[in-house]
Image (tube, rainbow, N blue to C red; front, side, top):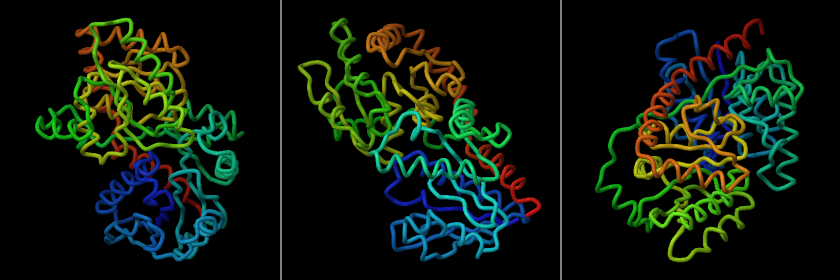
Length: 382
């Protein structure tokens, strides 16, 4: 069986986004599996002109890089170019790692729809959101099978996109446990990182794109409320990640502080620095209004950091109800949950142990093998 992989999501501009991490890790595992299974071949499209990181992947036997000038033209690629390239490569099935490319042509397609945020909670401008909804509905309609990362997302896909339940397969994402693990951090490296970022107190952490869906303005309000009510608690709040759409209100809220309640915008960090920063945190907070999986939450759990999260969307499901939860629409409830955990060392230890145990269930190897099963079924009988 020959599998063509749409590499659009590996554009360098997406490096800090979850869809890039997903595609990158699956490709790494696919390469390992190909070495064991002579019956599988992959074609990955690449171009050196448009900043697509697929060009840096080393080809191997049965894992080829196919140059395609169509990939240099974003709209052309997403509206027919990818399907044409898959057909020219004589693929039995094409894998689209995110719902950003329209499945057209004779080659059957398996698409991953991570969530339906363009419909339920848009996180881009109106024109971009409209395009996302067109592609989302097209992928749902024309894909032979749909992969998603949680039961919550599956229910939303069925409800909002009108597809049959049996068409949607839930495969949990993985977590790179070579980086995100409970091994003690390098003390000197962590100290240097904290000094570079200007973090001089114990800190609470959120990592992920700074945008309204992440509910960070309310987190900042809850953080300062907690400090105002508890003179014995003295922490900084660190927000790590790129600034996304409509982030100005969050950035402005972070800038307003007095002697206490400082919010540090750490910006984009490399994976090793991010893992260090997570391991040094006293508490990880995930206040999102909606998530399809929440890799940042799993990464914090994997590092053994006590973690608390919203009681909405997929977060209780993915965390296995192993965390402490709060109402994300209530700054008072968020503050109370943070305070409770920070003042109870036994609770922090329980959250740490339960989080680590749950996070160990999420591996990219398992995700890749289950994904290959779906691709094999979709490619049969073409």
